[in-house]
Length: 229
Image (tube, rainbow, N blue to C red; front, side):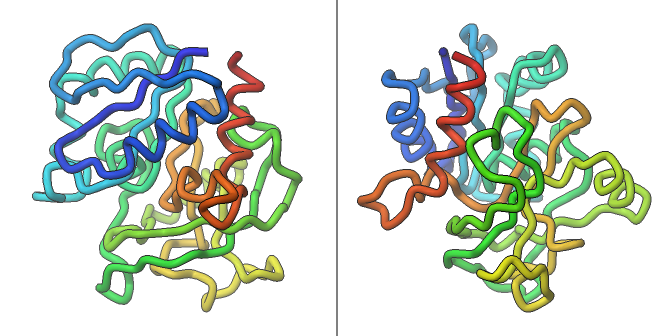
C-alpha cells in the first residue's frame, strides 16, 4: 500500500499522520509538498490537520488552491481514497470534494479536548475495523469546526448514510451537551457520494498508540490498510 500525506505551510499534524500510517502499513508514507504539481501514485491521500496558510481568508481556502490540490481533486474524482482530518476536512469542503462548510465554533473559542463519537457506519474502507454504533474517543483541536450545510444538503447526507461520525456522550446518547462546536446534527465527519472521501474534525492519528493514552484511532488506519493493501 502506498500513501501520500500532503504538507501545507502551517500543517502541524502531518508527522502524526505519517507515524500512524507507518504503524499500520509497516512503511512510511510519502510526504508531498503543497507546491508540487505532481502526486506520486497513491492508494490513499491524507490531508492532515494544522493551520494551512495561517487560516487566512477562511480555514482551508488558500490550501484548496495549492498546485498539488488539482491532482488531489482529480484522483479523488477517479476513486482514490482521501482522508481529510481537521484542517484537511476544511480543505476538502473548500475544494468542493465534500459539501457544506466549517464555521467558527459556537463558543467562538479554540477547543482542545477529547470527545466521544458514535461510528455511524462500519461498512466503509475507513471504518471496517469498528463495530456498528461503536463509541470511540478522539481528540479535537480547532476553532473553526462547526459543520454547517443547508437543510437540503443535511437531509441528503442523512438519507444517503453519509454521516461518518457524530458527537455523543460516553453512553452513546447524541445530545446538545455532547456537541463541542455547534455542528449541525452533531456531525463530526462526512463521506462523499461513494464513501471514498472522508472529512472529519476529530484526530484519529492522535490516539493511535497506547503511549498516547488510547488506540481508538488506530482502527481507522488498520481499516484502510486491510482494505487497500
